Amino acid sequence: MEYHLNFTLIWRHFGRLAWGLVMSLELAVLAIAIGVLLGFALALVRVSGPRWARRLVVLYVETVRNVPLLLLVYLVFYGVPSVVQIDYSATTSFVVTLSLYAAAYLVEVFRAGLLAIGPGLLDAGRAIGLTAFQRLVWVRLPVMVRIVLPSLSNTFVSLFKDTSVASVLSVPELTYGAQWINFNTFRIVEVYLVVAPMYVLTGYVILFLLRRVERRMALR
Image (cartoon, rainbow, N blue to C red; front, side):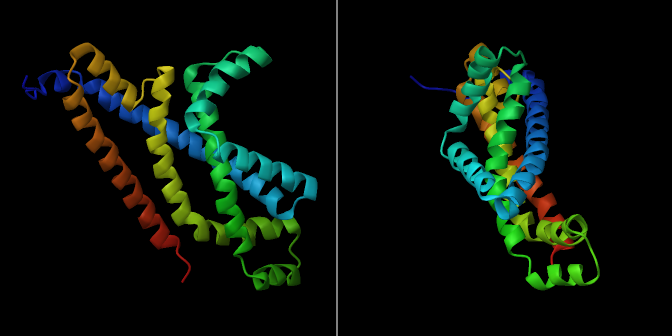
């Protein structure tokens, strides 16, 4: 039995893929934004916090990084509401899960960036009378951002691809749109031949833009 490619039905429903791509980007942006804030806060604790707090951060990082994202998605969406008696949408649940997942990886990225800052810069900040908070804002943070930008770029692209897991919760992102077209047209080969390049091209565009930011902010 021969299979003949027919993209007509795919182009007819291409709007679902286009809006799904927009949703995937929105999920990735929200997750990376929340993950950066949480990851940086935990990295500060990991570097400068008390021993018990550092151990808790290590436990969080190692636990999340060694549990599959799909399992975390199920735990947050199905497990947490049954225990805590709270109600949230599938989209909110996935954003929370992906943010926690991103933060676990970004903790180590930011920790490496903080430890890479030369002690001379911090000593100079102390010498001119900067407080600990001022040294964090005006010395450690700007230098750390320049150091970790390449790793941060890779993390963003990885999170963009991980948004495909949201399809298991029926969040209308790109992979869910592909599944909808497949179930309703039975053109499985055609739809994924279209979706795969959409992921690839979007990933390259993201990397291209972030690499330009890296070159502008690179340490000379």
